Length: 403
Image: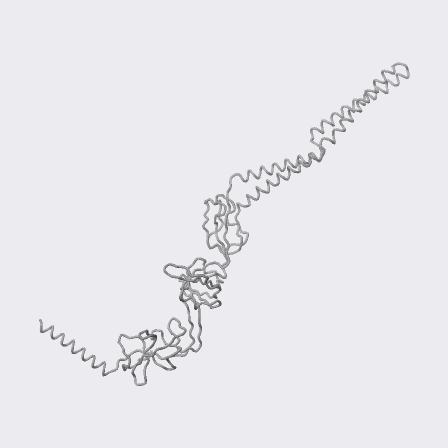
């Protein structure tokens, strides 16, 4: 058994020695890439949240039970459209009572304007009619006595008594006539008009309170938040829902603190949403952050971007991917990002004319997902080594396999 183990170890040593010999005598083939001139765009990749650029909150003005809810979250509404109706017991009865008081007050004013109450006027007219009939009879009696006195068939005393009776009736009729205009004075009419105004104010107040039971949309837009539910009870100031304009939208982009220096107003921004793969929305940076806040384990600044949303597919409240184009360099000298190493600073293994590799320190500029701009250390046509499983040292000879 020991002989077998020794044999295996010997073979392993021989194989290793053979491989070292072959490696030193035959340069390994390794992947390389050459520098290229191209336009490179530096994108800052992060996440964000969609919200309406212009929105308003709809709140209840009065307390009451939501009797009917006419909208759902995501619906388009127009300004003035009824979105909910509240129920407040007693308001309809209050309105009917106030309207009845208005009708009564107007009837009283109409009676006063006509000279007084109908019953009182009828009583005066009846009394005057009776007195006039009696006066006619008394006047006829006077005429008859006057003829009799001339014939000496009646005395002068009887004639005077009859004449006094006529005068008494005239006085009574005049007294009733004087009562007619004093049935109504200016104070009575003013009081009646005041009662009308008071009753009409009560009607207006009741109607106003009933109108507050109807909640309407203060602006046209999309209902993006609707916490209210039919049958729930609202107090004054409770949130019914939020309405916002769907186009354009605002995207609140969360940029990590070290990257904030790359962001400037007016930079283009591209938005994608995992729920709609393949779709993109574009916009611009409108406002840089005024403070850095905590977002989970991150320290971020909230960059506000305005994004076009013509199809209204971006729904407020959704979480999206954001790409801010922070830099564009035309005709940049670029290499693959994977070629850049950080062993002795930032650099690459560059291929020399003799087939050996040499460590070269470089400076970098703009970058995208795959390539990075080289602003110093390399020239056009230089070849740089890409990652491999072999460990390479400065001065090692290699066979380049260009990719």
